[in-house]
Image 1 (cartoon, rainbow, N blue to C red):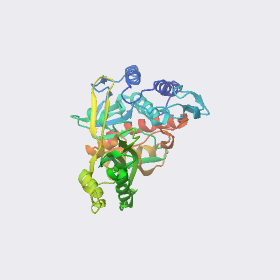
Image 2 (cartoon, helix red, strand yellow; image 1 turned 30 degrees about the vertical axis):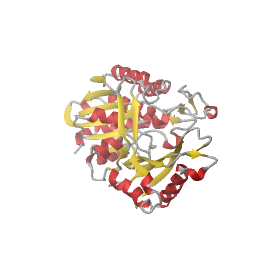
Image 3 (cartoon, helix red, strand yellow; image 1 turned 90 degrees about the horizontal axis):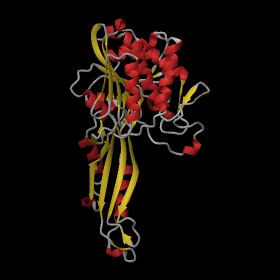
Image 4 (cartoon, one colour; image 1 turned 135 degrees about the horizontal axis):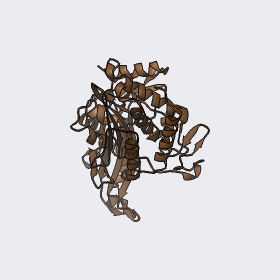
Length: 392
């Protein structure tokens, strides 16, 4: 699929328009409205916004075929360290062949590209149904907005358009979870600590046990991650008191085959002979967000790892499409979690990750997407859609 000059300008303009909508998790109303208007403008057959605020655009092909989803999220993370930004974070400015701003790579560029590609491919060249999903709250409750769209729908395959760069195709993704560790002690005056039981000391000792427990190794996924990211104690402020309780949060990346039970058992095993182990509790954390529509997404924070193997028909179709437009890709593991963690990990839908931009830029100052990559990704998605007749 070759783009006209007008089409190229429309992709760039639309990307800029989305970047100019901040849209933090739970606050995506403006971005969702922009996406819905663009779908209607470009002639999608059906445009709907569900009760959680996800926007779903549908295009029906002229021939029977699969239902394939192209997915992108509408939310972005807040700006941190604003003084380091060289361009206005929500300006969508163009400089040095790049569009600058929060969400340019993660992932409004990818969303703009797949939405545009679906609209630019003629219906006569499409077999089956193409859904473009613009989902909410991915940055806080990963994949759960998309999960609401997919529930009850028959979907054959899914592409989430997170940034991989043009020469990498993510065919697998790590899982993730958070583990909350609670440690009980006994409060006392800090001038007489021997009368109390300092919960922070016990939490520190327990944490050392967990840090030293063996990490799993996998020839494809590498080494799993179990990292302490937050500690709180009470009473707080703690002036004058030995803390009677300590809460510790572990953030973890998972390999295929790990379950809630097997993962927590690794922690319990590390603490098996620990003095005071009966005062330590462990549980999988929860994540929640109030959607801009008033609905709430509230889930246990556990996402499975996933792999889409080489023989899977959608992967073969995508690799063929990229090869045909001159892009040679390396299959890689996506180290962050994405909406594919739910589509593939929880729902078993063959899923891949491919999109313009660089994941290394995500959540950092001076985020950008290169215009050349942005436009090339439109061609890539378009060719994938044109090959839907060969799916299976």
